[in-house]
Length: 245
Figure 1 (tube, one colour):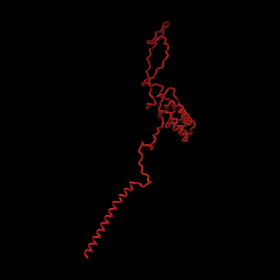
Figure 2 (cartoon, one colour):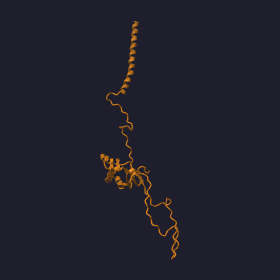
Figure 3 (spheres, one colour):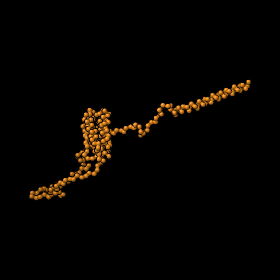
Figure 4 (spheres, one colour):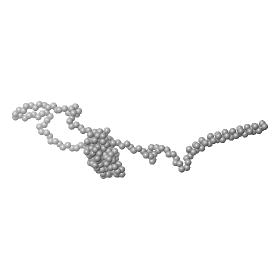
């Protein structure tokens, strides 16, 4: 009778141990299986992509900021250096800009057109380039004198804009130079470079029949004026390479 009881108890202990071992195996295998499922994606599932780093091929970088061409004075100049083999293309571009200014319905652009003139310098520019000078007088305060702005307002067709703008990008050697000019007064200010009036000697009363002596340091007849020979000026500041600030 006792043997039967011990045998039954032993069988219960063995069954309990088997259940504990099975539960422990489940606790170990389930996390392993979950980790493997995260590491190995299912067939046909695209692998996760890493965010693109700046400067790598195929990435899109932000466009550089556009600097508006505005003046702070009443008169302004803009210098543009053009490649000599692309002068005809740049002149075609300016023809389109002038047409856009002439036919604009924007009041601000119409005001800009009244004082905006375009010139080509006869003298060569830096490194053999051709210098084009834009003279703005009077300046419309706060308005942007960028060529691209004028063209965009006149031509809504994007393809047309790209065709015209290619004439600009293939012609110029840089972004140009902008100068603000202020008028110089023609009346000298006393104490700032104006010479004081020269002292004069009172003349002696004339005596009939006597020749009057000449004043000291003067001659009776002025010497004939000699023609002035133009002098070669020293190099001035290059507006394309060293802009005036």
